Image 1: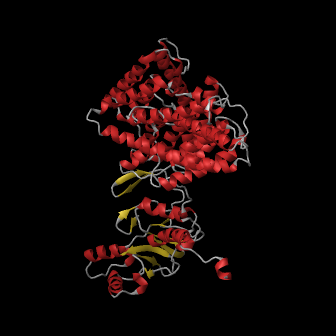
Image 2: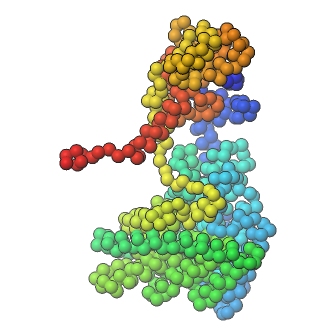
Length: 624
């Protein structure tokens, strides 16, 4: 079909009009480029869900393997034995030699980053986000291999990191590789990458709901059935693998605590502000440290070793900062640590994390920030109990709430970590204080860091802007009938091109209102469409302008309907590379009821902008 510009677009439904509702599974040629028409969305979603199931099982196995690999390297480095059980590094008896162990791990990771892939550096989630944003969700196979190994070495030699960041990136890499192995779109690869990340998170912490929400908030930036269903499939199966291999219980066994609702609400309000400030401090300290390492006059290969040296010195005096520290987090949540030790752990773990991760080594942020922020919550509760003896605050309750609030605010994934903190303890009484403290902390972090988070700052420095707000697309909510031009710019099929050109030249309002004009036959039915560009091309061929507008224009058209949403109509415009659509009656596809151009599509956006920014007088003002 020669659409207003000479391009041949197939798809007519037999009467010269294509509604594009049941688009054929064929190749469409636009501007010389063949593009495959997508198959029905339901079929594609089922296919992606089956792939997601495989990704979930595989990611669960990979998470278990990483868990055991960390245990193996920890046992080799600190206890000189061949065993894969998950052992805390804080019980080692190496004495001053404990300073050297992290340095060895730092050197190995530095070489892996230098000669393997620099994508293994950092905590993993920004790298997964970057793959989604600029690499069309493609991750290199070597990242899937080197990231878990480097993280296991870094953590196993005392790195104060968690396994969740690396397994999220590794799971995402597995999903991306499976997506690359099959015939998928970039959007489907993004879903599969997110499925791998969610599955890795779920399999590591036994938190299937939080894994799904985290993938939506940090990787997908959408909430649609096409992504939500595969995400749930992958996360559920990965959690089932975790339950089979590591047990069905929560990550941390926490004794019942009194969250003090409602009497403790004023203290939770203050804690929310403190957690927001702590989140900002973590983010700024981490990236400030990275900046300082970049100023060092040595090759970046040695930066992880230098950071590990600082870690080793801290670990010699405070062994609890070495390794993941799940046992210490459990002790904090169960209020087994005294105030002085809590203060030491809070500061030492934060400094060790910032120095180590800022040096460019491999490891996750979640567990170490959990430890430090849980200690912060415990310290706050104990301090308030000393200032207000009648407060009777439970340190374990405040530790749990702070643990979710700080990381949620720092990452701008507040909803994820409200659910996450609940899932790792399974205590429903924690939900109310978690919600309250987390949103206050998030508000403080947004006020002080409006443009980036601990996850997106690295990407922002590379010129990538991440929009993490979610809202319904106005084009999905507005019908074509609401913005189309009902006064159809119609001209008779027998009119000559010369006459039309003359009317355009004298700015006849009936033909100058739009770039395109609807051509109708003697019965007033749709016959074609002509644009000003068609007029110029026709005059080049026939300067006398004797050619009819029907001969010069397009006779097989892509149309839209009054009850279609603008999203569908604009997709037709983009797919066929056209800027206007006749609006026709569904029951009589040749009866024209309107005209939709690009201004009609943008009118919906203008309406949304007015709804957000134009203030209307309230009834109080009218009364006054």
